[in-house]
Length: 338
Image (cartoon, rainbow, N blue to C red; front, side, top):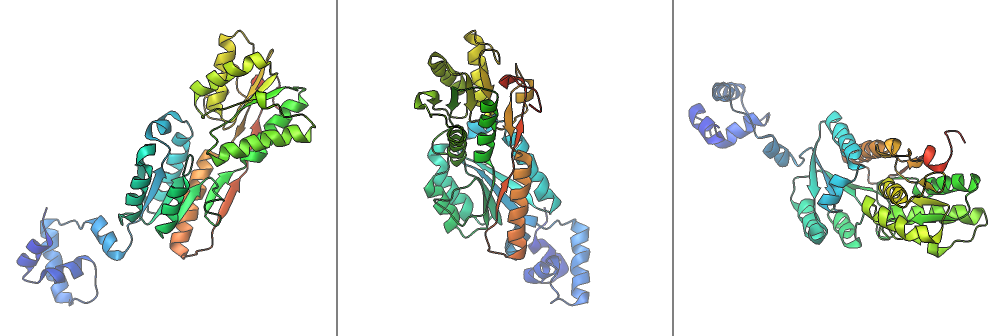
C-alpha cells in the first residue's frame, strides 16, 4: 500500500502537504492540490479511515460491553435480539459497533482498558452482574455511556434503558392469583442483579396486595440458567406449590422439564410462568405463559440515546423504562384473554 512519504516524493512536496490534501485542508494551493491528487489517483491510495477519525477526535465507533461472562452470552436468547438492534441503529447513523466480552475474573481490567484506549466515542454497558467497581470505571472514564439496566445505588444520575421488571412480575403473579392459585412459588434470579431484585419485589407485591402470606420456603435461588431452573423446581416440588413464577424463561423451561421428569402435569397439576418471552417459550410443551420484554427496542433505544448525547453534547441524563406485556399461554391453565 502506498504511503504518504511515497506520494510526497512523487509529487515533489512535503509529507505534511500531502497530509493536508488528503484530509481536505483548505490551506493548500489549487495547483499543489491537483498535483498531489493526481499522484493519489495514480497509486490508488486509500486513506486510513480510523487514523483520520482519531486525528479528528472521533472514531464513529461505539463500544458494547458485556461483562457477564462470555459463555453466558452465547446461551442467553436475549442477546441475539438485543445485539442486532444495536448494530442496526448504529449503521443507520453511520456508526460501527465494537463488541467487548470478558469473563468475571478479567472484567475490571478489561473495562479499564476499553474505556481508555481512545478507540471509542461512547459505550453501551450491559449491566447484569455488574459490580460497583466497574460502574465507577465507566463514570470516571468521562466517555458518554448508557447502561442497560438500572443501577441507582452506584450511579443514580446515569443514563439507562430498562424495562418494567417489577410491574411485569406483579402482573403475571396477579394473573395466577386471579386463576385461583394460592401457593405460588418463585425461582429467583441472582441476588446481585437489579432486574432479579425487581422481579422478586413484584412477586411479593402481588401476594401482599391479595393478602397472601409470603412463605420463604417457596422461594428458591436461581441463576437465570435452564439447569438451575430444573434443580430449583426439584427442590420446590416436595413443598407442594400450586404454581411457580420463574424470574426468566430459561429457568421456567428448566422447571417445565423438572415437572415432566417428576410426573407432574403442567398445567393440570402445576402452573408455570416465566419472564422474557424468548423465542423458545411459544414452542415449549406446554407453551409458556410469560412477560414479554422488548429486547430489540432496548437495543435501539440505548443506541439512539447514546448517539443523541454524542451529537448534541447534552449532559442531562436520560432514563427510559420500557413497558412489558403479559403473554398468556397454556402453561398457566388459561387461554389468551383470560
